[in-house]
Length: 296
Image (cartoon, rainbow, N blue to C red):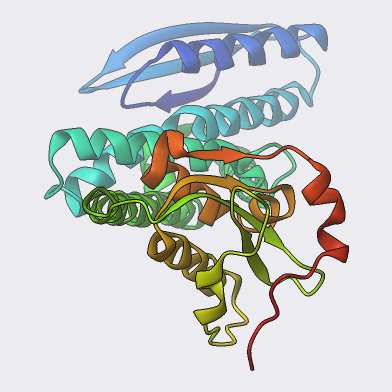
């Protein structure tokens, strides 16, 4: 037998073993055979692969290519989470353990949803290329060192994913504090109106009807600032409804579809006092019933 390649790894995990076995099975289907052995040299576990004598001249190249694919899949599927942990310890150690766990979970979700790391994606392609080039020229690979020193693009991708998770967490935390403040403010108010229906007219302007389907008088005093940004309009809608202090709120179809953030905020603030209309006669006639026109 000829020693073909040795790979040093920090940990031998079930995922790594599965990828190695997958590689060996694929190589076996080409007619080749590799003897595989696990051992430990120094502090590092090692994966040893032996190519039997008498095999085709290109057998080593075929196996190295298959091994590169399996290792690329392993890095993408499992190594990211190990680096998330290391990066969290170095850069975000000041978060309490519970918050770090929450950020880690968010990072996992963001990472899994990104197609760039899937086979055929740009990030995966970069990892595979690095492995193929290195395995073509070397019989010994320290996998962790290869990742740290040769796969900077992938590590930047992992870091960017973690940073986004932190930003998303902080935004969500700020949003929850905002919701608490609004709920406190609403709790102090006495309801001024029994019920309001919130709709959009043909110009995509909000208008409000009471429980008798008549225009709410207070809306005549509303002055729009002419915001073009949908986020500003969503915030303004929430402020308007809170100022009207209704006991019950019905958000009609065209409102919560166009302004889902505002609908979500109102549901959190007013809770059971908010209902979503699926599609009623008011929704159907909204384009023809203009109760409110934006002031200029």
